[in-house]
Amino acid sequence: MNIETIAPSKALIDLERIKKKRVNLAIFGHGNVGAKLIDQIIEAKTGIYSRRNLDLNIFAIANSKTVLLNADGIEADWQDTKRHKGTDYAPEEVIGFAKQHNLENLVLIDNTANSTFVKHYTSFVENGFSLVSSNKIGNTLGLNFYNELRQILKTNNKEYLYETNVGAGLPLVDTIKLLHRSGENITRIKGVFSGSLSYIFNAYSENNEQFSTVLREAICKGFTEPDAREDLCGNDVGRKLLILARELDLYVEFEDIAIENLIPKSLRKVSKDRFLESLADFDVPFHIKRINQKPDHVLRYIGDLRGDLSKHDGAILEVALVSVPKNSMLGQLKGSDSLFEIYTESYGKNPIVIQGAGAGAAVTARGVFGDILRLSDKLN
Ligand SMILES: NC(=O)C1=CN([C@@H]2O[C@H](COP(=O)(O)OP(=O)(O)OC[C@H]3O[C@@H](n4cnc5c(N)ncnc54)[C@H](OP(=O)(O)O)[C@@H]3O)[C@@H](O)[C@H]2O)C=CC1
Ligand SMILES: N[C@@H](CC=O)C(=O)O
Image (cartoon, rainbow, N blue to C red; front, side, top):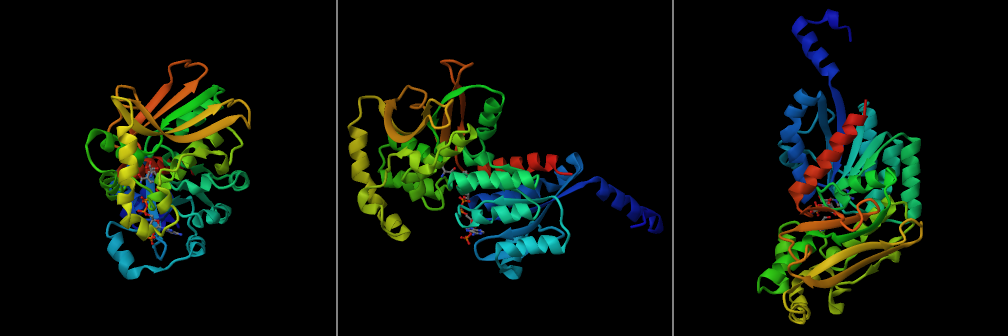
């Protein structure tokens, strides 16, 4: 474009735009976290545009059924527009659309909990996308997939950020990465890794309610996984432990984790609907666990990564329900707070402690937003 040949005011506007960096975002999943993220980005967009010279352009929003595409940017009325103008969805179409419109600085944001979708990561990366995900599955499949994805990212000079995979909006992954990369010897990571199970056991210990009542509350508040059985069977905490272990270059697979499953045996193989209708089946077994504790003790569901963490195959990963004194650090947790104790050689017996909301759509979306901004800083 020859700026001298167009009217001065238009030239000024175009020069303004040229100075900005446009980052094109494709958001997959608009449930609790995804919808909140889209709204947060749209709300903050104008401020970020003027303060940071950054133009965050959402060009695709998809759920499992339809996708809304607009190269010039999707706006605040996205829910209605998608309902009316959304088209049938397949991940390849988003890649094709980005190519057709010559979109650069592409970022895929995965706010699904889907295991099939993560298999598309590699083709997105090969087609110019960097990755941000709240979905943990991409980091917890087999080590082959984990290593292959990292190799493809490296070859294509792309990044993958996933701070919200552990501790939602809390700065866990980054802290562990930095400590490890700087040569600090991490010797143990222990704590309450699950925001939903923290909420459940905090409420269950404080109030004289049925287990099924607090479980239902945790589901309604959006603290659990889309399928709450993933939290209750321990898989979600297991995944978080695995993600941190792999950050420490430990060669561990999901099957290496010893997990205490909290779901009564009779409900482990039933359908999701049947499960949700039968939450009262948790009440008696958990009542027995609650009354069988020592005085002034409370239940907590913890993750523990320990062993000889200096050896690639030296780690022990464990997820278990424990009873702890009410006045201990774990015993004093409130709400949906997670708590992570990071033991290292330099910090000795006094661990680094990171504590705060470990689940919830707003804090998680804010964490994903942080990853998008961090990634945007690295793009041209
Ligand atoms: N809730 C929390 O506190 C935290 C959540 N996370 C992670 O965030 C992710 C999202 O959680 P949440 O928002 O609660 O889940 P929801 O169930 O509310 O939303 C999931 C979204 O993903 C969509 N989806 C499913 N499969 C696909 C697919 N193949 N392609 C595109 N979209 C798809 C769903 O669409 P449809 O409706 O059509 O099925 C839905 O829009 C999870 O991976 C979770 O582990 C991480 C940290 C904290
Ligand atoms: N279901 C998870 C949500 C965050 O990862 C939890 O309860 O912690």
